[in-house]
Amino acid sequence: MLNRASVRIVRDVREWLSGRDVPDGDWLADGDAVCCLEVLLEARENWLNSQDPTLWKTGDVHRLLVDTAAPRLTDVYRLTELGPVVVRVLVDFLDDTDRFHPASMRVAALRKELDRAAARFPAAMADESVWRLAKRVFVAMRTDGVDLADDAAVDAWAAEFSTAPAARRRAVLGVLLDRQPELLTCQFVVRDSQVAAIAPGVPVPPQFRRHDPDTCPDCSAVPINPPVALPPVDELAKVARESMLMRGMLAFGRWAGAGRGVTRKGFPSSADSRLLADALGTEVGGSVRDPRDHAALIRGWWLALEVEILRLHRTTVVAGPGLAAVERAMADDAGPEHVLSVWKEIVDIAVTGPTPLAPGDGSAPELDEFSRPWGPRALGELYRADGPVDLGGLIDKLVTDYHGPGADEMLTVLAGVAVRTGLLVGTEAGAVAVTVPTDIDTEVVRAASELPGEPIWAVVPVPGTTVELTPLGRYLVRLNLLAEGTHAPLLEPAT
Image 1 (cartoon, helix red, strand yellow):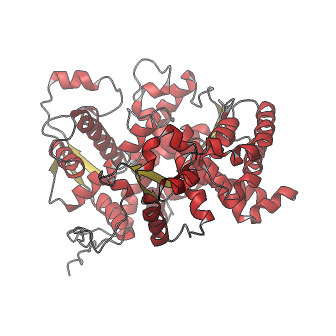
Image 2 (image 1 turned 180 degrees about the vertical axis):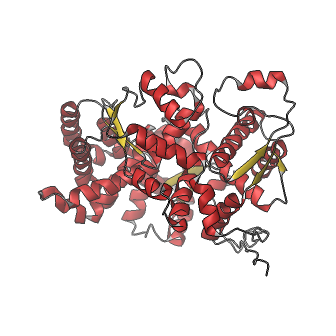
Image 3 (image 1 turned 135 degrees about the horizontal axis):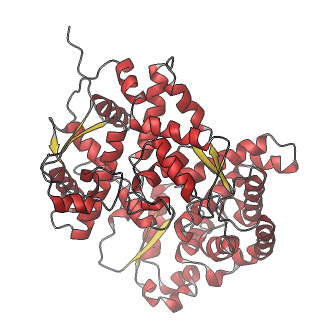
């Protein structure tokens, strides 16, 4: 599944092509070409840890096409023919719109590298000696006429292949059997784009089990959500408009304006970082040599890029297209529905953002991915709670619910950081209220000082801290529950 940055780039490439009177414009009408671009961007994310579709360094094109796509991806969507074409269209788009990341290689050198990789790509795609397990299995299924969209047909093929004789396995797996002779006795499970080879007698991992509501004892259970009371939408919109989150996004966009310089890593300079912190009203301590040293500043920077309040253009950062919607929402005459729609879109992204331990710059993708669900999980628990909840108890319950009572200590620590970060974003959005005891231990205060500008409770555990949803928070969670098809009743107003 593509990340949000890649989804936006695909959207922007299509818009860019639709306005160009050139032969490449025909690419827009080719559904296979669009799918090829998506498949290749997803391959960069999954196997090359390249989360930013605008960042291309020396060797990236070769690694994508020859080292990654050729051994792992089948010729679905005419990838052999269209793969280099769609990468070239992406390069043209990034160059023409000046959207390359500041750390990208020179465009002329990138085009030469693409030409060399494109020349090698067809032969690499056909070279069976480098094919990985998944590609071999999917090619075999397609050759056998299996409809890959038919789960029953895929499962039937995998079951048959799991009992196939050695000659049949050799025909499909080829040289892999020489390197991994255990594949002769493994059972095979296929889910989406993944293939698992599991030793005999070993249970199928949960992520490869097919969801079956007829045999799942908990699947029919509907979460019990209490009926909630909500104030009128104009009152909710007023709180949303006045939230620190909305005011911060507006400040980011206006600070960037028509453009400010950024470093090769895509961050503001030291001087601009201090000006940005002043514009946001954020405490940054004595030095701002690197904005990543300041959790509040880098968290806001990440979010502003994610919601397109900011947009990187090579050596500068400019106000992005998302700023206009925020400015309209912050205007005195803005309708409450528009205000709440803009607010909710930003908050939904913010509460799944990276923790201070996972800066969201691609350097810690596993930690980033681990962190994302904990904020929404915490908000869901608070929605079902009757009054304020002890923060430490909330974290313990969530860890036990999702990882069992014997969860690893480090996992518990990381989950705690992710929960507190998600709730911190909730407080900035006006969705969460936090009450902290007044008698905080001095050692706790000293430990929290390592992240200036952040409230103590969000940095380290503070015994006695309680959290609860505000009416705006209940509004947010209820809409998300309804979108998931979950029952979330609303109390009728008193008459």
